[in-house]
Structures are given as C-alpha cells and as structure tokens.
Image (cartoon, rainbow, N blue to C red; front, side):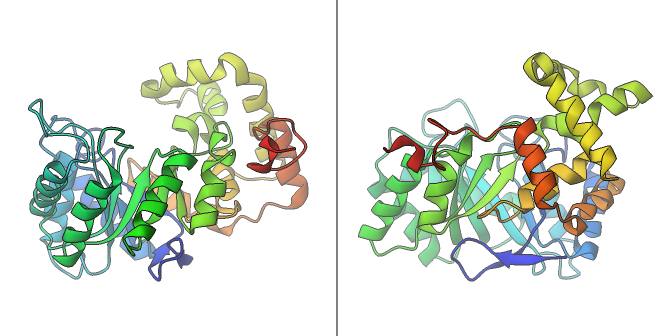
Length: 330
C-alpha cells in the first residue's frame, strides 16, 4: 500500500480510501466486516463513512456496522483513520440538520456512540451551510477538538469560494481549519479542476474524490453489458451518462484494452496521477472488488495515455488558454 499526508497535516493515510456507503444497504453486515478486515490486510487505513449512510433514515445504520466491527477488538480502531460527516438531516425536527453549534454537538456525540469510539479522526461537513456563520461553526468545532472528540476537519461538496471562506475564518481564530475536501471527481466530471482543486492546493487541503468511476460508467460497463454481467442497479445512471458521452466511453474502453488494463483500474490510476489528490473513495460491494482495486496503485499512465484521456474527456477550461483558475483572467 502507498501512503501520503492528508493535505498539509501530518496524518498519513492510504492512497485508496475505503468508502462504506454500501454497508447496510447493498452489502450485508457480515460482508461489510469481511471487506474491512481485508482492507486492513491490504494496508488500507483510511475509512470514510457518514451519519446518514444506511437504509433506515436517521438511524446511522452504516456507522453502527462500523461500530460493531471496531468492538470486535484486535486493534481494528487503532489501525483505522476514521472519517465521518455531519450536515444532512438525521430527523425531521428543527436543529436535526445543518451546521449550527447545537446540531454539530448532538451529531458528533451520536456518531461517537454509534461508532463505539471516543474520537473521530476526520470530521467532514457534508455540505456548505449558507445560514450559519463561520464564527459559530469554527467555535463549535474547536470545542470538540479541545474535548478530544475530533482531531481534524474536512469539507465535502464545497466550492472553491467556500474553501476560501472557511480557511480565512479559521485563520482569524488561529485554528488549523480544513485539511481535506471530498468532491465528485472523475474523468467524466472534472468541474472541480476550475476552482476547487486550485483552492485546495493553495490552502493545503488534500482532495478525496468520490464517485471516482462516475457511478460505474468508467468501470467497463459497455463490455459488461455485452457480456451480460452489468449490474441492473446502475442502468438509469448509465443511460443518463451515455446520452452525450457514449462514443467517448467506447473509445475509453478501447484505449484501456489497448494498454491491457481494466477500465476501472485506469480510472482510479488517472485520479492518483492528479496533483493534490490524496486518494479516491472506492466503494466495493464484495471482497473481490476490493482486491481488484489495488491494481490501480501499480499502474503508471504515460504521457501519451494521459493526453489521450484528456482528448476523450477534455478538462473544463474557460477561454482555453490558461490552466484554471487563471483561465478567468486576461
């Protein structure tokens, strides 16, 4: 396994992040525990979850699954850099969502109880809260850190402007602020390259891409459809993605075949080659899928292949003359 620092922090994390969104919904608890055990065997130490994951709204099913796994002992918790999230509704009453000081305190305590741990390594804001001032948010977070309940803070789905707001507010309080941003990022969705990635690099945030294979579209879905092994659950998303990109996806799968690599592994390897990316969130439904993902760490894409990928899936660049964010200037 390869490791890197999480942004400008001193925290060492694996370059593949185990995503747990399927745990308790598409993957049974028994299989979820087996996947996490295998992840540790491979040296994956960075696990990502959220209080809203799981089939039953408001119950934190996925966090509970992780908590029962930690409770088995064997150093499971000590070997894990644990990341979870706060913001989305955990109920329909007032103050059961957002980033108010009240909700942050309650949500953190509830996550700690479900996860059966005394601290969260990386507590991420699942979304920007446009109605709560940063003074309130950072004060609430600083109290959690003083109490030893949270060590680091991250954002998710933030715009570049939001990252700047957060970091400047933290700086005024002499607080470390954010160390990571989790964004959708893959060959077919490169919008973060316009401002989010430049902002993250400027402020020293590690970028954690979610949906690294665009919901499975970049996993070789056309080949799987021809072979009759494509998962039905992805058909709706795939149909929407193919609406304007089928030719690009076909060419992508051919390119992967030409270099002798699986499309899913190439998609992950491309992300790992991007400056500022800590590691993509992989969401295996089985142990076998997890095992296969490690191939991405062994792939080095040459300049020619990278250039071809840019041709198939062009980066967004206003005016096209300069790399973002300078593309907006003259």
